[in-house]
Image (cartoon, rainbow, N blue to C red; front, side, top):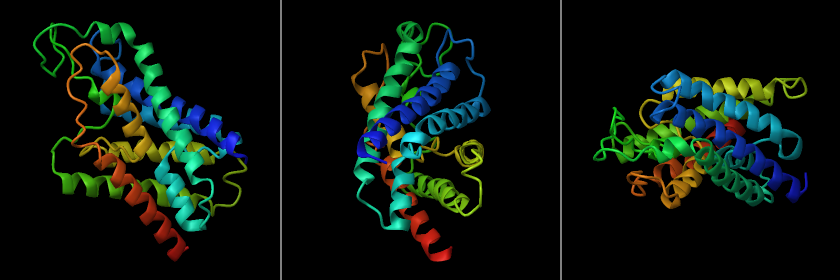
Length: 249
């Protein structure tokens, strides 16, 4: 794969991932959305379908990593580091693009978020805090616990992805991406409660940057004091998964 193919594939695939993922969060969160308050299960499946669409789209060009933690885990396992920077650059470019596309899709809903005094519950007449559409927010703010959660959840993502490669014919049959998508749904349902399961530095940091600079009414804080955790945790988890896979398999 050429550097150009990798960059284009990862940019397009990650943009689709974030469009679906941030889009389902917007659908569930924002007032005047037909999916308002439809719940966590809808969010988990929305992100899973985002992985499905993004990875299948990117796979012919780049292999469809869509996540620096996955790229890092593969590099730790294989020792091949030469193209890591291209993957990561494309992933962050795609994450920013997907977040912007989500904003445009829900532009009217974001613009309607103008009333009240800043409450976060989104009842009639109150604006909705919008960071949760773009990035993760912990339910209980405890840096150590939040970091550990992100590390564990990312190992639970990257280690199976590496192991799936041992299953003969899974990639050739075209079902590998489907299985990974279901894995992401499962992580969301089982491990997403404490922190919102970033498990992907690009998925959190790129959209957080977009949230910072977009002119969203009553958008609230972008919470940069927390932003290092959904970056560091997944990177540590991805590296640990690569080490464990290399040692055990």
